[in-house]
Length: 422
Image (cartoon, rainbow, N blue to C red; front, side):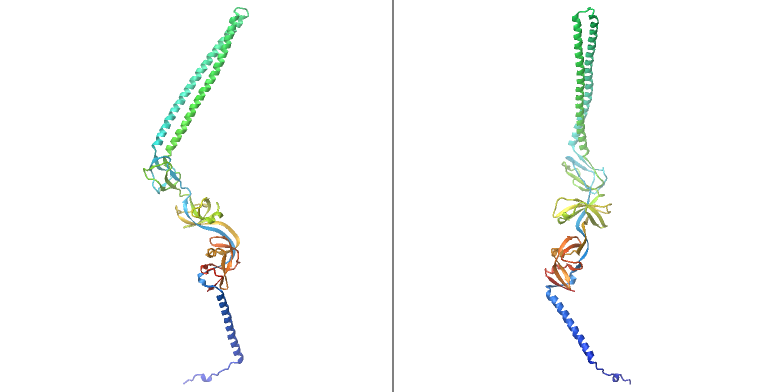
């Protein structure tokens, strides 16, 4: 039988110095634990609330470039979507249906207007009548000119005859062959013939001016009637409604064979080759936005960029409508009235103190923030500057590296100090 080695063991008594060291270590550890407990207890008793860290979102204050922007909702609309109207009271004969694709110049509807058709016939008849009167006036003008010229030529022949008679009398008057009284009568006859010839010539000239003026008046009446006829023809041509652009029929406002009044809407034509984004901008951003501002549109197929091209002058339900035009080529696969989101890039602020945006901006009104110091959230006055979708600018109250509670402060109840449990 083998025995154990217990008879070989010897009990060693520790030296007094080792006992003192061990006792000192135990005492020092106890003092440290008591000090830490006292500090934790002091912080706990100084805070008004205690919140779990899992319910909070804490962010760090940094310095960088703040892109000031605004997130808005919008929808895809056609930049060109003309509404076609009836030009006169008429009966509508539709040639298309809603959703049909049409090309520029295609007939969309034909309007029946007996009044305009009758007016065109009257204007055509009046034009033809004036046209015949102008032709007749041309003949009368030539006739009157010939008569006036005939009288002038006759007067001139009489003047020449009187002049030759006087010349004959003058050749024999010197030798006393004829009486002096006959010589004087010949001179008077020549003067009278001169006067008649001169007056006849002037009368022919005036007659020519008169007939020319009368002809011009008739020609002007014919031109005026031609314009009236052209206007009547244009109004009749407008009864045939044609597509002004390529696109498709968006909305039909009338039914076939329906009687409509003048200026009544017939249909809306949508041009899908030129689409824009109509966004609803909150009233608070209106003072900061302007035409030409860059925008980023989020589409199902990705992101696209554009520029603000139009801004409504009125506010409707605290919203202002604006139009964003795509940069470059239009994205594929867009549909009319498709809902999208857009981001308006208002400005960039370089080298500023920033903090991620969170509910604390609204809950504290941007005047206070909770800064985390040794597990305690301390309510600190701050001043905010520009804000964006994801960040806010810090003007005062914080410094780079500070830890700030940006979400979850709704349970703090505006307490000055709040303990955060890990």
